Image (cartoon, rainbow, N blue to C red; front, top):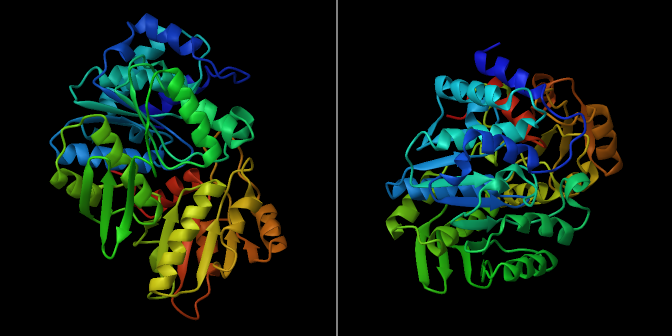
Length: 434
């Protein structure tokens, strides 16, 4: 066990017996630390159900193409805890991370606190140690009561597409979830909303108005779309003719569009060249990611292996659309290797792939100390898939699943359903994020 892992184990032990979403515990800790959240570079705060990480990756890449130094806080990590903290463009070093975690552990003095709350305090501490031009801050759960929402005066707030997820905490309708996401809006901050369902947009606009904010809204004030082999972005101030985004899938045009709109609306000093370079160089692992290497070599020659960590119905829909686009360009039999948490809508997830996937092989989600929910049993998921009309079977692990993939012709195989599974896959493939 590494020193970082030893520290995280001690911090996990501080978690309250019953989770209640509140900002009081973190505010107490931050006050004892001297309120580092009040001394950050300009903050762009990002909430939403899907696309948060990809949108942040586009913003970071564009800003860095413009020569800016950018701090980033995202969650969860895929392979290493360090991935949650990027300081001025680089993942935090073990030495700096461990020192911050142990210092804050001592300041907290054994008080009850959730792991994400103390992790957020670590992020703010780290961000005050290194100079930067911007902080890109991703919410962990919801918005209104999310730990990141203690930042008092963000430069701007971005809300990516909203759909149903985490109903036990955020509500069981889109408008209830939108209300929670809108909780990051602050008086004096600007706001950009990605294209939204009408009921979500109505709630977001109502909450923005209460803060005196006139939001910049996708589909109304700005838009972006593929055109031939290019990407066109346009807003009320003009048009950008750009190369297509590096990240795969039609949904990445939407995420890139939101990222460009946010940086422009928030007044970032970026050029058309910076935008073009940024969207071509953005990296966000486990989002419709091609996965050449050790695992792909287990398949019949000429096959493709892909990895996607989308874990809700909306994530499945954008993955299915991306796979449909691939199939239009080059048809291949599709097999899903699916591992999914027990609190997810398995039936809803699978429905997106009807008529697209030839077979489904279900596997366990690896256990992790930071995983708050257990994985669904592969046999249970396979049974649901069969009831939905798929040819499905359960396998004990990833290697066994890949051995079950048909070998009669080149295949297209997608490992999907969970970010926790995706992280384990990247480690097995020896291609962790850098």
